[in-house]
Length: 180
Image 1 (tube, rainbow, N blue to C red):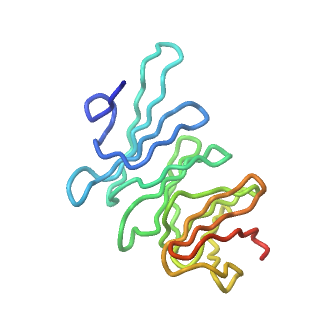
Image 2: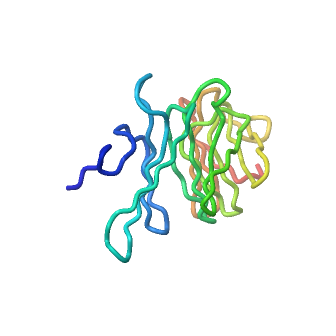
């Protein structure tokens, strides 16, 4: 069994999330535990087809506590849900074509994102869900047909039929097709 740690690959020993993208790269989301340790970051490993050796790239996100979730969208964009409080609470990053972009979400989100068949990226949020359609955010809560949304965090999952499932902490689950 291989064990990765600082010194042989990882930039931090605290790993919160792991993703393998379609290109075969392994992404490790890291961060602080409590108030000590390095800032949030990503260690990205890809095995060279020529040498068979692991090649590492490191990304550091100052002012953030952790990389809570990693998600690859169908267009190969890697979404990063960063843990933070205060002014950084809704901040996301996305990696596309070798560049990072900050995407500020106006809502405090939780859990890994999901992507529906129309290409929208969804995040669970307090009191509802949040949809990103490429340029802006839309909050959907009880007033928009998501009746069982609760003040606690709601988590999302997209099924193969194009429905968005929303789990409600202490409130069951709902299937939301966006037209309800």
